[in-house]
Amino acid sequence: MKKIWQTKNIEDCIEKVIYTSKIQRKDFLESGDFPIVSQEQEFINGYWNNRKDILSVKKPLVVFGDHTQILKFIDFDFVLGADGVKILQPKEFLYPKYFYYFLQNINLRSLGYARHYRLLKEKDISYPESIAEQKRIVKILDSTFEKLENAKQNTEKNLQNSKDVFESYLKSIFVNTNKDWEEKTLGDIGKPSMCKRILKHQTSSVGEIPFYKIGTFGKTPNAFISKEIYDEFRSKYSFPKKGDILISASGTIGRRVRYDGEPAFFQDSNIVWISNDEKQVLNDYLYVFYEFCDWQPSKGATIARLYNSDLTSIKISFPKSIQEQKFIIEKLDQLSSQTKRLESLYKKKIQYIEELKKSILQKAFSGEL
Image (cartoon, rainbow, N blue to C red; front, side):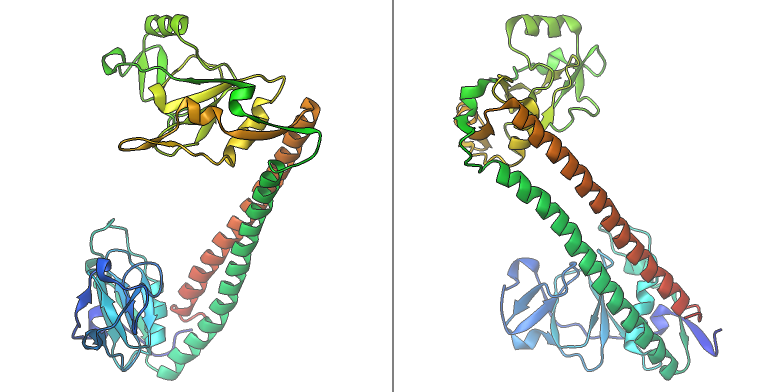
């Protein structure tokens, strides 16, 4: 139960601070004599060498990111970084670390990249009159949060390890030197094709056949074309067949999706594919290979892109036996399923840790710790 607690507006709890010069982000040094503290997520954001720009910290304070809402507890001399840094120096009746923890318990609505201090200054700070009681609360929070942070870091490490194990196995597949494996180019196992260009006036906001860019395939179409135009193009040009792997040839090169066989039109030469001979290499195997393919696109005048010649020269290692390819795919599916299950568990644990921290803070500042 609370004993002799006070409540004051936040602006009545902080002292006026004289700011030193703020250093622009573009001028930050990678190393130097003095740390720069800004509003970004990282605790230290750069370095500076000019001593006259140091803000001397005689007692701990809190840096509040006006745009980002990031909070940092600072107990050392530092240099201020750019705009958006608000210094909150608690008055004598507030133990600085208590003040910092209380601010973490305040929820502000997001204003995007607008400034948030105008919301923060409307909030109140509740605190025990006794500094000793404030220190007792901080000691419990320090100890508890240290354990929770260790648990979070271990969970994040396990999460990364599960991903690394899966990716390591995937990579190992394509460096196999077994005598029952072959190495060929993609041009040896199939014919490269690229989607044909369709003019803007041939598309509309409604229609029978969806038109996709690589990023929207399988989602909401970018536009539509008529069945007449679709049939005309199919009669003249090659189209992907069901199961073919469509690859982005510009932008994020190598992003891939499976074609489900439903009537659709795709974004001109920005999408390419190999009409591969599945008697040699299964589409499922090819899909996995593309995940770790070392794309080396041609350098155009303004942008890099993947041409048919780039695609056909890429080397692929694969088992001669189709049954062996199927076995690898089945094993990958099993491992992928297990990895996703572990990732889901680890992500839930991380979420639980964050929720637990919030719950502990709420108890601490309602006198129930």
